[in-house]
Length: 213
Image 1 (tube, helix red, strand yellow):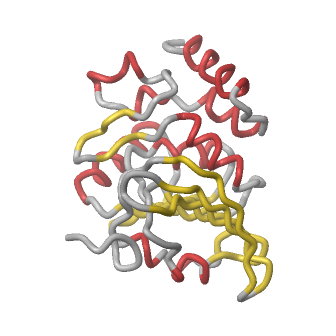
Image 2: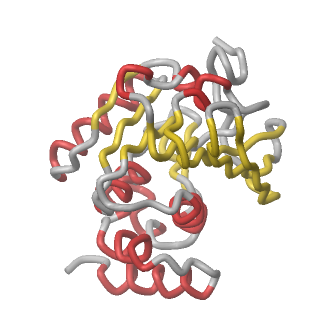
């Protein structure tokens, strides 16, 4: 199978970097990342690096995808909200792990391309075009919320839409560097927060993120 060896090498690399969740590693070994990158980038698809996908967006570094997914501490059947559909790779990893995935993308052109790719690959993810910073209240609460863009602060709407014991993983900081915040909802207004420094994402734009047109 094309790129199978490269995928296994990537899984081995991620394992050596501290990714230990077997279900995450299995999904990374099965989902074909080369399908989610532009044709000119396919030979870099299994390097542990972020890659441009156009429109000023990137497909996240595989380690970042694996680490954020691992921190959600998921069980099959969990309902997950993703902010920033982008290439669709993160959503495809979650879907392969057996999650019920809802994903929001603000760029209609990106979303259209990714929806076509999901159809082609048989990836079952519910998507919509809109402002992810206010969440997707229609399907709340969520067992996990994963944000794949950097925010100046934690959007209150996302904390409200977390289920009890649910986790929100979000990069927070300025536009050059963020701290990954892992927030667990203990009670309705009681949250536990852990910080992992030194991440870098594209800006999270929206009403409760960076206010840009």
